[in-house]
Image 1 (cartoon, rainbow, N blue to C red):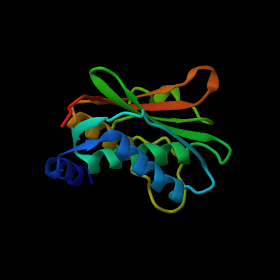
Image 2 (cartoon, rainbow, N blue to C red):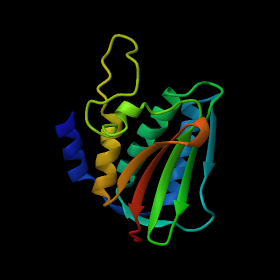
Image 3 (cartoon, rainbow, N blue to C red):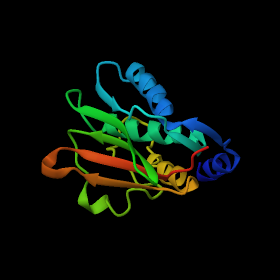
Image 4 (cartoon, rainbow, N blue to C red):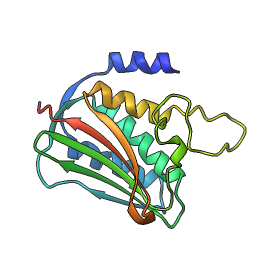
Length: 165
């Protein structure tokens, strides 16, 4: 699985896109996929040009949103947002209703680490957050995770240096 992922990263097609449009398009798909769940999206009303591998960024967002949905409950909210800064863009996924365990915070983005309890018959490989880390690195960025203050939930942030197309 890891070898296939590395091959996909190497073969990814890069393009100049509007990052806000990518996030809004992904959010529409998530609303269909997670019907009945609370999903908020906040994207600045401005052009957000970025030279990137859009399919890889969409895959990374998919992993983070799936993670947020699976680790929170029906009454919790998942928020997807883009923050524009002078020299970088942040893709942020927040969810209420869960916390990161202290013992996993240092290893969270390593291969084969999972936050999920075993469900069903199939194994959970714990590659989702590792994939997010690799996608961020392929774009010259990084990913971080933190517990929000006062038990408000969890935030995952993909930090991307600006590369306008």
